[in-house]
Amino acid sequence: MPVNNLTVIIGGDAGQGVESSSAGFCKALARAGLHIFSVPDHRSRIRGGHNFNLTKISDHPITSWTEPVQLLIALTAESIEIHRSQLVPGAAIIYDANFKIDAKALEKDQILPVPIPIDEIMKSVGGSKIMANTAMLGAAAGLMHFPLEFIESVVKDNFKKKGESLVQLNIKVTEAAHQFIISQFSEKFPWKLKPTGGPKLMVMSGNEAISLGALASGCNFTSAYPMTPGTSIFQWLTAHADKYGIVSKQTEDEIAALNMAIGAAHAGARAIVPTSGGGFSLMVEALGMAGMTETPVVIVDAQRPGPATGLATRTEQPDLLFVIYASQGEFARLVLAPGNVQQCFEAGVRAFNLADKYQTPVFILTDAYLANSLVTLEKDEIDFKSIEIDRGKLLSDEALNNLKEPYKRYALTDDGISPRALPGHPHAIFNASTNEHTEFGIITEDAELRTRMQLKRMRKLELAEGDMEAPQYYGPEKAKVTFICWGSTLQPALEAMNQLNEKQPNQVNVLHLVDIWPFPVQKAQPLLEKANELIAVEGNSTGQLADLIRMKTGILVNRRILKFDGRPFSPEFIIRNYEKS
Image 1 (cartoon, rainbow, N blue to C red):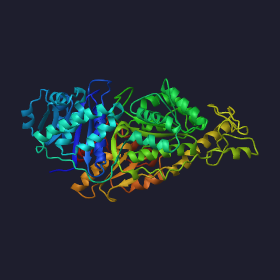
Image 2 (cartoon, rainbow, N blue to C red):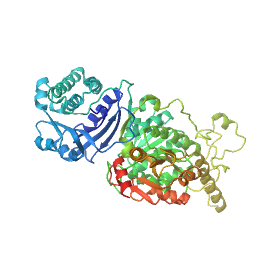
Image 3 (cartoon, rainbow, N blue to C red):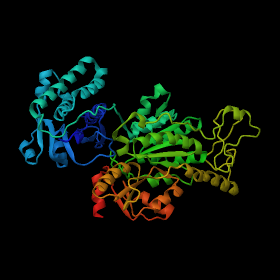
């Protein structure tokens, strides 16, 4: 009897509570000490159209979702038709008994039909059809022998603000569905869930982790025009704005969002702008202003497929080279690309320190897959104690009071970083111009000074390369093949590596880049050169990281596993393409 090792899909129409039901289910599992990796799939519609969440469950940490599914909770009949092919022999489908489903055909395919008499259950306890998803979770708990107390604890939390009577009614619905399953189907489903006896786990998405890291690093300003999948960062920070002193501004468009954040950062705030590729496209001119005025600002590009509106709610990694070279002219910017939730938290902290240190924009590149997926963490996996705030060459009032010479905001320095003063001090009055300027910020067209100023700004990249983290190897040191990845492809690549090495030891390892620009040539090149064979695993159609590696190191990555259909990588997809190439 398989215990604590299965994948569950909850599927239904937009507006049926698919996402909230899945989130509640994941919380219940985490409270039982079980690990999850939950991936949402949304169509770009306000209401209607099929949505689903796929949740992989285990009693040990999980690095990715996987394709085979053991249980489908179908809130619509359409869900059964869409996901039926994903079910393994012995799998089950929980669905409303009112659906017109050919149960015998399911049984012929070795699938257990589990029809739930939703109308009868609601009538027996005085519930409403709108509570069907609550009933389905109770039924699923019964089928898997998962203690109902964990589901009920989440029900209480979700409905307590709406009154105790509603809490108790939902619990009655859950218990009635649970009891029905126990009486009819208890021993017919082989996969079971059992609490681990370990501590409760945290459930967190990539965007929540970035938000938490930003907050911990002193972020106190956010501005955004909502754009999937970056919006949830803005929502999270706005929800916590009053408690933690964050100024939150929803702007009329993306142009205003970055301009407003640059203004706040110029005044000394730690400012963040969450967006996606389409929104960032409108911010490009403002990005140049931040580069020329040497203003620190953090931009999160949560990537999705393009061009134009593309697949608005899907995932891809198409913006790497775009953010590295965006805006007219040349100036320093830094690009971080976290690969999991822990790295998202770290990026949320590091981005602000790096922006202040180098007085320049810093990007956090994520994507819909990493932004929205839920994973479980133990409490010590988010380390608040190690956080340090680095404001770089920010001059204190005392330092400004002791100035002997006129203040030069853009002083020519060996490292390219000028001492920075915030507006308002009488000893530090300066111009901030988007035109080329002197050390005092006065507009100039002098050719020699232009050259010196441009070289000064670009020297930041030389220094910043030392602050970029080295790529990290995972798996056996001497492997036949190395998967190269960046950002969220780390997670399925690790699972693919594990599965391939179980078949044949030392077959595959993984080299993951989390800091991409300035490209850490000195740290990356020796690691790349020692690999026997390189295969790029990227969520775009051209292999942008592979091309960047060739440009910066001369190393050719001639094999590529690419995915650009808007759906996330799975380990099985990587393995299939690896084995056939």
